[in-house]
Image (cartoon, rainbow, N blue to C red; front, side, top):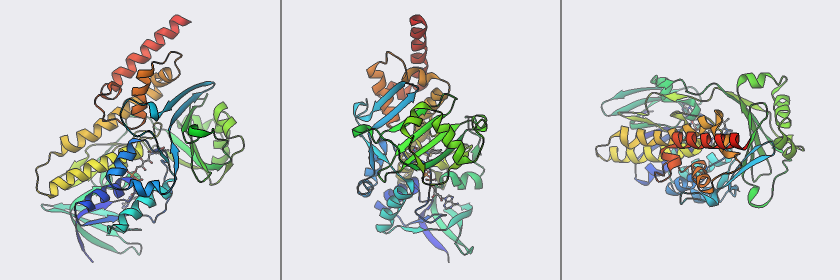
Length: 412
Ligand SMILES: Cc1cc2nc3c(=O)[nH]c(=O)nc-3n(C[C@H](O)[C@H](O)[C@H](O)COP(=O)(O)OP(=O)(O)OC[C@H]3O[C@@H](n4cnc5c(N)ncnc54)[C@H](O)[C@@H]3O)c2cc1C
């Protein structure tokens, strides 16, 4: 049976559900197709405060609040006995002071169910397999669980298929990432000995002495997400099955080892390799990409869901104007805007791996005002043009790291 809609959304992750919420509010006929059934496991569990603005605008925050996910009030970076503790309550941008750490199966289902309850059709177990364009929109082939295919006619297609990267693959839009190949090995554990009070919900990022970094993300269900990110060469130094490998890596970092001394794995370890990817363009005449279907940088600053919600928000608003007959300039109104956020984070990811950010984070004489500005980037406010650590991120981080390096040499 063929279906006709205004907008077909591919994927019901945070990008797809939030775009659906905004488009539905304006009365468009939608279909969301999702390849899997929910809840499904996906990595990416630490949100940033800017997510709260975006969830609120899509009328999804109430449903998320009701789940009583643990509050995340900041991020703590640890290297041996050095610590850099960011608290979102003292950031530069006027924004949310907390957000959530979320098991993504629960979080994504919460968003998708809230949207479905408003009347948006989500077809689970249904994947997009082909697309062709005509002057009025697109014809999309979808495959049902029994492998039968059907066609959807849509005036516009929004690809929110995340790591599936459906349109980038079908339309040859992919390009290699500018970052080298890295791997992530991760699991969930019980028995994490957490700090107390406001510190409990913060993410820990531990710099492992051998060149990896480790995340520790506590959940309200008593479990904790732990993972290590490094080059394949680093992982090759830890032989054995993935569980043994991850345990050895965690226990060879002093901070992770002491916090996780009593941990027990609650699921088998999983590995993802080469997740960073680039993209040639974010839109065409009758389609756009949002979330991880665009470009994915690196997990170190937990930017993925924030960028997914922010790009979906901007894509939905641009689609609304186009379908209402307004002239829109997708390059400036959508692509440039999304890339501004991605590029701000790119400067921080580069600075993390080339040593500039560790130099700044673990400096003895940190400037509180500068740290407040950097804190706002770590809170996801990467469109705040009044923050020099957003608008001139590369230059500002480079200069600051150089000054601090000079001061350290003088001190020696
Ligand atoms: C190791 C690692 C750690 C990370 N940690 C964090 C973190 O702490 N915080 C953070 O914010 N981000 C993190 N991320 C990034 C985060 O996982 C993603 O940015 C986020 O999930 C993107 O959301 P999305 O809605 O774009 O895509 P997804 O959440 O991937 O959703 C896409 C959906 O599309 C569906 N789909 C795929 N192909 C098709 C198809 N052909 N047809 C129909 N449906 C399809 C999929 O089944 C999926 O449900 C991490 C990433 C990695 C690799």
